[in-house]
Image (tube, rainbow, N blue to C red; front, side):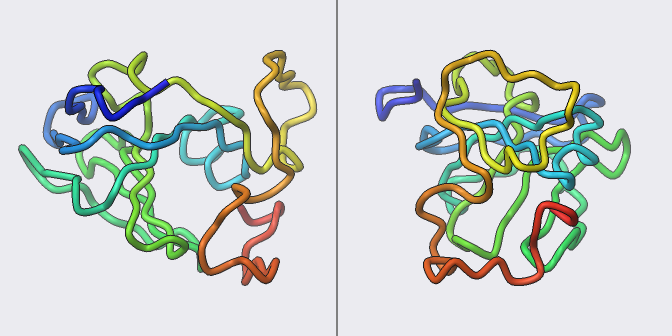
Length: 155
């Protein structure tokens, strides 16, 4: 589990054009099984780690940004296509970096699963981590249960 004692983490894309540092440790990490993350990762799930947006420090290059839904934007390398992060509207002060883009992905082990209702049927989740059918339990801005234009079909 990531703790306050975890040293700063660095990461980047496959080709090295984009490099970044997180000035603080992520405060949570999880698997996302939504359709958008599946398509972004080219896999049944994407593992992300959440940190304060203000603590994302570019070292080299800038990620290309694409507004992939009404919910947020994806960051990726324009040269090699590596997915790097997602900045969601809820909460806007955080950034979800892809754990696979970290130089040490073991530093941010997943603690839960979200969007399990979009799980691909042949993908079995064998761990005992907590599961959520949709969003994380405390998604600021969506306390009323609203999903805006986001649902299991589009997300």
